[in-house]
Image 1 (cartoon, rainbow, N blue to C red):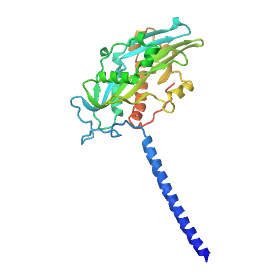
Image 2: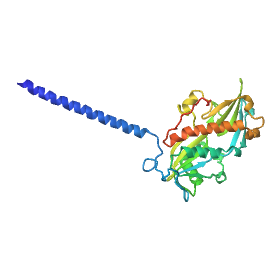
Image 3: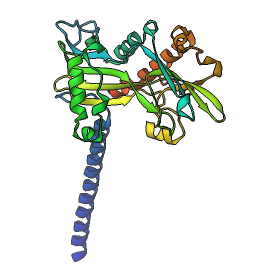
Image 4: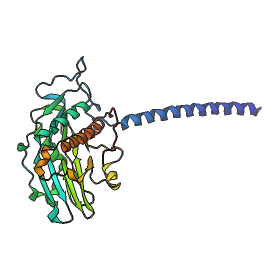
Length: 304
């Protein structure tokens, strides 16, 4: 007579086990979905998401009194560096050439505006480098570096640059700096490099930009990154794989290097090369920092 009772108990336990497995499966799926949602990059505000003002037409809302969703300030400057490095100090030369006719600031703002979500109000903020005194290199000692607060310095810098405006976020696009290979030399921003080595010289054109996104309330950095064309690997990995410069660059024929540095400003091939790399890197990197994906992934084969 005990057998039926045992059978009944076993049946009940089996059903409870099945129910428990089903509930565990649903909870696991729900947790995985939450993890997937929280893993998506986004520019956060107090509400945890981007909020923008939209008109019925879907166009950007008018900006009044300096108020906006995104303020964009371009601090790269209109300059192009003609640089030579070699085995001895006597081979190292660097000349900065003004290039106001290249329209790089306009290009940078246009690419930033295109990457910002549709319907967000955008304010272009003019930049006056004369307001910011050059850095005193004599105070850049190890002691000074340890005592400095880089984040506070950056917050103070951008707060001064955008004074008189009131935006929810600020996007700053500036020049990036990269070492040249394993050497102690560096390249900055936009320029051309003549690397004069034992086995001959090689010419490289570079367009290095850096992007920072600040919270408009306390000017804390929300996101930042170099503007890259190859997004498959970090800069550290790219350098490990043998990339000469951390950012967009390409090798050019030897005759591309200007005979006189000032000739670079009137060279359309150099201008168009820089503009092409700059636009592509911004079009790929900005949407990711803003929590959006590029609509079309372009080829990285032009990057060297």
